[in-house]
Image 1 (cartoon, rainbow, N blue to C red):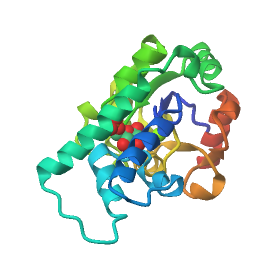
Image 2 (cartoon, helix red, strand yellow):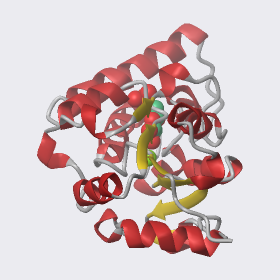
Image 3 (cartoon, protein in one colour):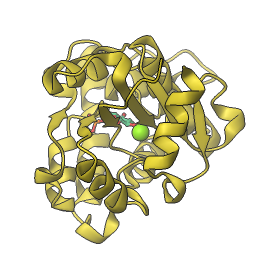
Length: 224
Ligand code: BG6
Ligand code: MG
């Protein structure tokens, strides 16, 4: 049976714009202050993961056991967020990743709905700075959900608001935790990044440049 794609649900950070880099730089500043050996390679684990879980992962790099009070942990997470907020002030409409504007036009022309499913509490600021508020049918951010990726909640909530069955949705992610969330939601998963990092994705593309409607349909056929 041929299934039609009815909706495409996009992650935000690292898929619509390169804020994955801003998150990295902000955590790097905190890691450096604490003398932790935080690398780009380790940062891959933080992608798609909530702010507090990211902090927990960062602190796990310490050789000696660290004992922070809850208040101190909150302060560290808040400081990271302050640095991140400064960095995203500079985001402009031109910072949308290549291929995304054309894909959004194609999807609209073909009656396919669109949503953002983001783990970030800063999602609306980023989308505002990109001036893309009116380009998605639905936007779900971290403030509206209880369970972070890899839990499927944010993708399922987006599908529910779009009034589309999850099996007719394609999710696009740049994070391992995000691909897990899409698959747990029984959606088709397209990963953006190196093929070896995403064994569970239905289709992996090295960049958003090659993400078009044809690839979206191809990914769904691969899953079927
Ligand atoms: C995700 C990012 O989109 O949002 C993670 O991939 C980030 O790196 C998470 O930790 C939470 O973001 P924020 O803006 O709420 O700290
Ligand atoms: Mg991401």
